[in-house]
Length: 157
Image (tube, rainbow, N blue to C red; front, side, top):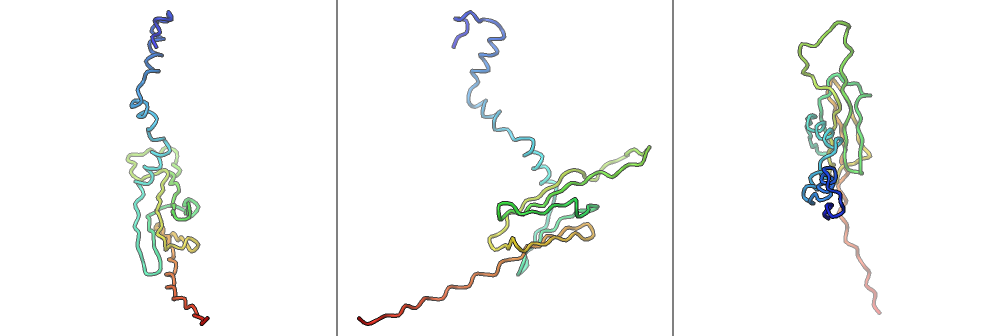
């Protein structure tokens, strides 16, 4: 629509018309941008390395957690098959007059998500933090029993 026809030929209305005429491609870029929460969670996950081991009867998820108390760590199962390990590492209290010369230890939120295999028993999960290392153990479900063939008696009619 041409705003000059209506007598609205000012810079304000030109800007308004340009905003209304933005093509779909430009609009998709704006609306498909990741949210701050998504970016924060992605950074937290990328900075939390983990080892995953498979044993004959369980899975073990091992993450270094130096200096954290058990209350700072949360272990959950979401959607029946996603193991979530999260928490927050806080900077310690500073004595008056102290200033940092170098800050290298990571602080802030951390999180890791693991999709559990089908044979993981989400009702049998334990977590132990010892010497700064968190070990989450997920027991395996016993393998399903093979179905025995069903015998049907044949009657004579």
